[in-house]
Every structure is written in C-alpha cells, then in structure tokens.
Image (cartoon, rainbow, N blue to C red; front, top):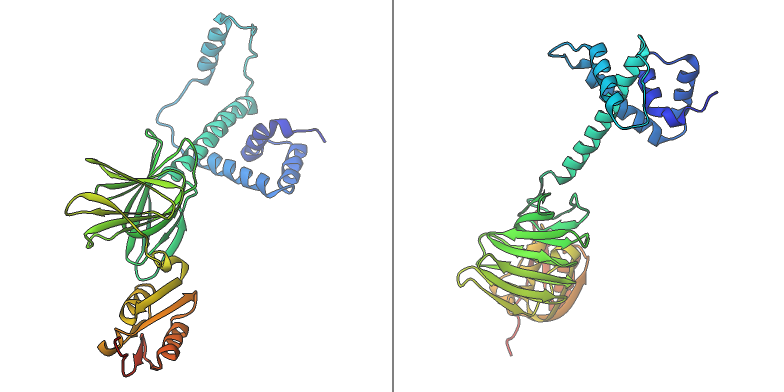
Length: 333
C-alpha cells in the first residue's frame, strides 16, 4: 500500500466525494482506526464537506475560463513556473475544489473555535454557590445571588468581567493579557493574583481582598489604591473614596467553609454561618450576647450547631430548614 499520509486532506476529499480507489479507501479506513484524533479530524472535514455540498450557487462559473486566466497570470509572473497542465475532466478539478473547500472549511472551523473562546459568557449563582472556569482559563467561585458576565476585547487584548454580587478569582496570568473586573464603574485590575470581590448593588461599599499577588483598585475619576497579598480595599459609593482595612477572618468562608471566631458573640457567629449555609440557625435574643472562641473547617451546619450547643449548654431542635438553639442565655461580665 502506498504511503498517503502526506496527502491526507486530498485523500479524504476523494473519499468523501466517492472517487477514492479501493486501495485509497482501505488506507482511510485503517487511518481512522489508528487514533481518536484522526477520527475527530475526519468528522470535522466531513461536516465541512457536507455543508459545502448543500450550498445552492447563486450563479454559474466557467471553470475552464477561470483556469485559463490563472494560467496566463502565472506565466507572466517572475517565477520558475513556466506552464500548468490543462485540467482533466472527472476528479482532477473536483480534487482542486475539494481541497479549497477543506482548507477554507478548516480555517473557518478554527476561526469559529477562536470566536467561541472570546464570546460573551454568563455565570449565575442564585440560591447556591457555584464554581466555574472562564474561557481564558481563569477560575471563579461565585457566592449566592451573584451574576458574572465575561467578554474578551480582541482590540484591547483585555479579558473583562462585569460582576454583580461576590466572587473569588484565581487568574490564569499571562504577561500580555489584561484582566479587568468592573462593577458599577469601579474597577479591579489583576496583576497576576488571586482575589475576592464583594459588590452587591444594595451595599454602599465595594470590597476587595487580595489572597496572592497584587491588584489595582480604581475608578475612571480616581486612581485608587494598589493592594498586595493579605490586603483589603474598600470603596465607599457615597463619598467616592478608597480606604485600606484589615481583612476579616471569614471573608472567604463562603468558598472554603473554614470559619474562625475569637471571643465573638453568638449573634455575629450565627449571622456569618447563615450567610453561607442553606439551612439556618435560629437563636433568641438572650443567646446573642454569649461569647465564644471556636473554629470550623468544612463541617455540616448540623455538626456546627451541635458544637455550639455543647459549648454553651444549649438544646437543639431541628426543623425543615432551621436549627433552633435554645437556652437561658449567658451572663454578661
């Protein structure tokens, strides 16, 4: 059997057109069995070939005249080519046409693939948190009631995210790539980093906490601030000012399910837990001032409630979507 590997596109064109010899057909069938990539490539070309064959031409073309014009043009070029063979009837012209279709089709396929990668993408987390990977390879984790819209500006070479809610970003950094988060005209520009943005429309502030790397935090009219690892920036929507603060312990608890409380009152502890877990803990006013130091790491809300009850000598009553903690309260010092 001849080695047809170097002419695989032309050979597939013949095969799809039904013009392949028995030996050529046998080669194609054997080639398809040698790897999944070959089958995938063949399927792509077959799709292109089938779509091309269904196109209804709007006008007829004189292929012989076109060939003569091409031949004449090449003769006048300062190239080594001096003559071209007259096209034969049958498959010769079909081979040329099929090759053009394949080359155009493959180019169009990769163009569409590229376009899809830069197309707008929307990620929404409603009642539950959600993790996803953006088309540029960056990973995001959305808190509840969050909407994220991603788009790539080819002209500016900028990956841009519009955020409404809270999200954790782990940026797939490239030196020639810009990554920008925008919320209500406030911007966070990545400088190779991992960071969290809290930007709920009903809140008067936008908060950014940097886990690794650096970010620029600014608006169109304010150069803003630069934040490094373990830094927190706050933008006040009313005063239109930026400030730097100390990050709270449990900023990322909605993602990590890790909580750390130090001499915290039970009311604040329960509030933070209820912001993360679907099932809520309910306590009465007498228990809200009880103080405790405790940490939790990926425990269920039922396990957490049991620890709180054991620590403060409380009773636990479970309902459909609630866990009720009851007790006599705590003495204030």
